Length: 220
Image 1 (cartoon, rainbow, N blue to C red):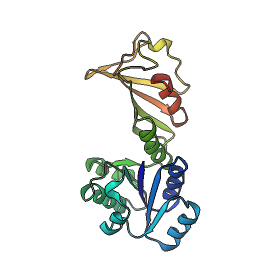
Image 2 (cartoon, helix red, strand yellow; image 1 turned 60 degrees about the horizontal axis):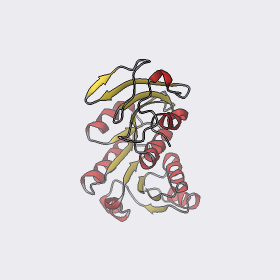
Image 3 (spheres, helix red, strand yellow; image 1 turned 30 degrees about the vertical axis):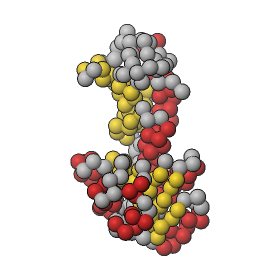
């Protein structure tokens, strides 16, 4: 997976380190020379470009047109918004994720088709889970990212929970099933509700239990 990150502060450097640790290709753009040098030393496997991520030239240098994900995580919401818009509009990046420092701006990001996330940890998990399992989509982060509302799609075949009633599911602690979307209909979960292939399960879970919930519903 090829990931371009705009912003080399604490959030950007954390993401870069987390992504290269899992063998993803990371290119990071940072406008401050001292910070770009620091990230280059701390995360040597990442390619660090000294420049402005809101400038088309530097996004071109970073190869945003061939990136799988573009992430803007500076401390300025306006910069993050502009950078994501350039990545989408000029380079047609498949996914644009923007850090939102002011929750009031979240709706603007979403309206423009940018995934808005306010928690560093959730940004990392959002990218990594999309890469690794694909069947878990984070709908909303609550309580500063410690609590997640997620949607888990059960595969057409081979699901660990297919044909199992909810009362017989061994759900991880602190996980609650909220609803089931089945053939465009909403099913309110009850103890005798049986899960079917293709169901989309909406659940509330603590961040630490998200993978365990996915394993219970989908399998390894």
